[in-house]
Amino acid sequence: MTTTTITVSGMTCGHCEAAVKEELGALASVSDVAVDLNAGGDSPVTITSSDPLDDAAIRAAVDEAGYKVK
Picture: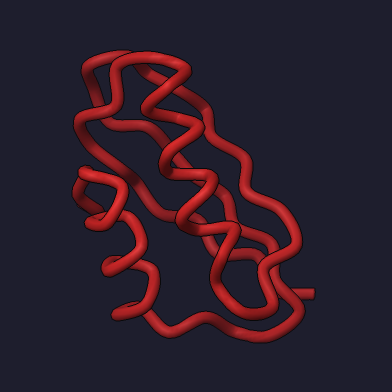
């Protein structure tokens, strides 16, 4: 298992959190996404996967959800 931690800015509520979890969870080999929501600030997001993840794929998934990786 591989754990990747990123920081996402702009999330303000549970709906935001769910959108990010859905997009990241759709990436190949991802088994879990945990968000420590800091409403209106920077939120740490921990992604668990069976293989290392491509940074560009992570950024694209977060962007698709409408947020930015810091």
